[in-house]
Image (cartoon, rainbow, N blue to C red):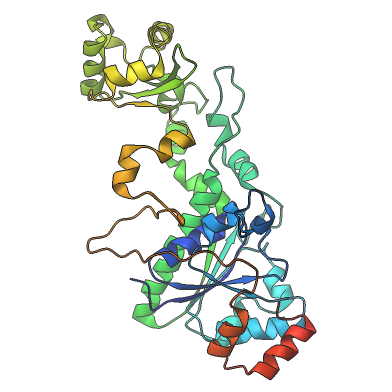
Amino acid sequence: MLSDLLVLDLTTYLPGPFATQLLADFGARVVKVESPRGDPTRHLPPHDAEGVAASFQALNTSKESLALDLKTEAGRDLLLRLSERVDVLCEGFRPGVMERLGVGPEPCLARNPRLIYARLTGYGQTGPYAEKAGHDLTYQAYAGALSLNTDRAGFPCLPGVQSADLLGGLTLVVGVLTALRARDRDGQGRVVDASMLDALTAAQAIHTLNHRAGLAARARSLPLNGGFPCYDLYATSCGGHVALAALEPKFWGAFCDVVDRPDWIDRAFDPSLRPELDALFAERSRDEWRVILENVECCFAPVLDTEETLADDHHAARGSFGEQGVAPPLRFDPPGRVPRRPAPRRPGEQGRALLGELLELGEDELDTLEGSGALG
């Protein structure tokens, strides 16, 4: 579906590689431009039998690796020359870094006016925080998300899923595809400014507008943050947990009917009901509740761990997991996904072949670049 796209991917860690992985899954040719040392996720344990880190494999399948030292003049020149041949350049450095290297949007677009120059940062290209350091936890804190995800004692919970990073990556994909669609009409390249903080802030629009309308945005008081007993998490007798999301009257009514508590039907939004629900769910194990409630139309689910998720029948039917990792979150009819190839085992694994193909460099030139350290 995207087989006519050639993408240079200068991003590292999770957000940018997640975005370019989605592009690769639907046919884009993605060239991962790494430093000679490689993407930092290459060095995170665990590693497979061939020495490839699981984190790196998860985010970089089907990509080709080119190792360039952008601290060298020759390395920067190669990147500029490559920018002439590609559709999209994605980078994830702090604002100003690419400009100081001489490979920012201005020189790249001067060479290729049709280029989509996509930038993903923590805080965006402008604003007081633009040059601050950060990771997912930082962005969640600044976005107010951590204040809305607390335990019952009110302490913010360390998120197990890096939602700011992932939303930032998805936002970058939307930005790239939108810019490409606009280029189809007017032939012009564009700079895309995406940020993890902006993405997570936008995702909280409902909380922001509720707050402005007078509903104080405090954890455990908002409707979907523990304010309603019909929409909450409960501990079971075995130490496991279940999720009940019976927000609509028909679902709550079905739940009350199965547990034989018709007197609860009018108390779905009554916080004083929670102790009674705590006591009810504590009477049985998680799997016993699965037998009773899983096939009832009440929006019940067991809280599964990763091993249980991998073995889940629904995921198997959807083809969610394969030898090359987790499938992309889209299905098309007819199919648009392309088979995945393993992630490049080492930085620059395809570098010589790529430069020979895209820039028509000969063996002597490639040897000279390797000898200078510009080509890893």
